[in-house]
Image (cartoon, rainbow, N blue to C red):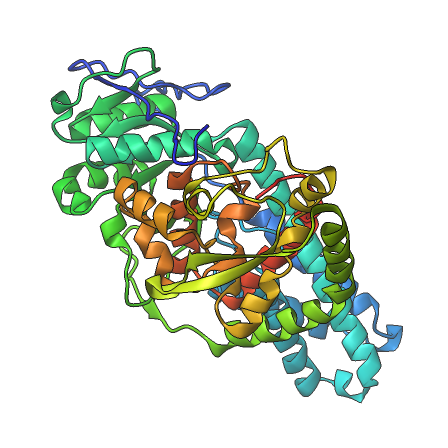
Length: 487
């Protein structure tokens, strides 16, 4: 695959009038009509009971740490009720989205701490030693977070085995592009089974590709939803909500969850960040009708960058010194590689790396995409690239403020211009400081991978940025650090 290659979008076929047939996901059995001629069953909704049981069990384990004389049933019941109410108000029982193990940790632990603080202040538990109360809170948090992570992991596994059938609503070209991206990411748990669009006759079928039926009326869309047990509807493209209001009302009345996906580069806000419900295969998403709000960046991101990069530079100093000495002995002078990259707001800066390859000329260095598999690279240089040790010098760029620990990967001016022409969403990546790692990288989009997918993940990261998301990405990067990925 070339640097800017993407998987072709699925073709489409015009659904015949009166008989809609949509691709069914593997293992899916369409709903049946009941004795009274009722329509097929509505989409299945995930139960919240497992999360309730996990949170309740966490309360019991936390209370078990207390002395037997202080395990007041009424106090424990009030604590459980308070935690459940706080979690519900924070949408922690929302089963529409399956978060990662670390994503909801601050929210869960914070509400547990608030619940314990309230019952301790209003009950005889305030006579206990602080160490006992802190231990009880820690055990409660650990049990709740572990249990919730297990529940979410089981749900993600179920979605991978049986993806949620979905219809994509929007202009044909945009809907096909989004469908292709979702099909390239089977772990996202959503499988498009049909497109709902206007004027499909303007695009012909693509030969040799399995087609997704294109539906144009509310009746066809509702029949497709019934036949395939569609649970989610993904709305893409500017103005689609107004143009397809009748279709969306029909699908919403059937019980489908309506999501709005940012599929068009023009929707990326250059003035700030938008609150949403996370991302789906790199597309920012929110429930249809949810208000778009702006979020201010936090100095916490810069503080995190300075503190961690400074500490890592001190810790990695001996490793960098050893690598530099070996490179100097094997390949001669010129251990540090300097190259111009494009950073936030399109400003150029000089990025530092350990030199693992010597380009034939400055032109080759600026315009050649990748040298990860060059035969003339030494075994040690290949080792540096596989383990990403050659990237450690970029910690100095982070400390200086040229880059961030987490953000879109910076690119050379030649490729920024090239990719900006091929992918209209690419320039929007420069709304934030570029980073050593990012959302795209932890999803395997490194080296010679799709630029379209990369810029989509990068923009989704910016749109849904939070300091905790940065921490999660750093932890996942650390877990993948020694894997042979190249760069």
